Length: 85
Figure 1: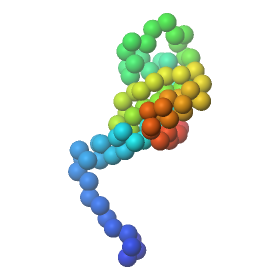
Figure 2: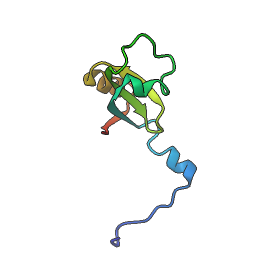
Figure 3: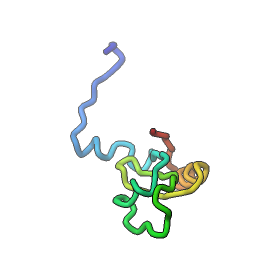
């Protein structure tokens, strides 16, 4: 650590809310993986790949068939989108 860097200690609760309302992450997911996160998902062929947008805390926000739609959803909600793999 350099002289200009400062260590910041966060509680578990503070860490859980880090980026909340500011950052969202998106990634490609399969419908098989989504059943637990989107309990209302019905009528979609098993194994279908979609794009999902999640809040910083992991809460699902939206599903889309195109990456650009997920990015547009993030921008409409004034969230900074971050891609994860």
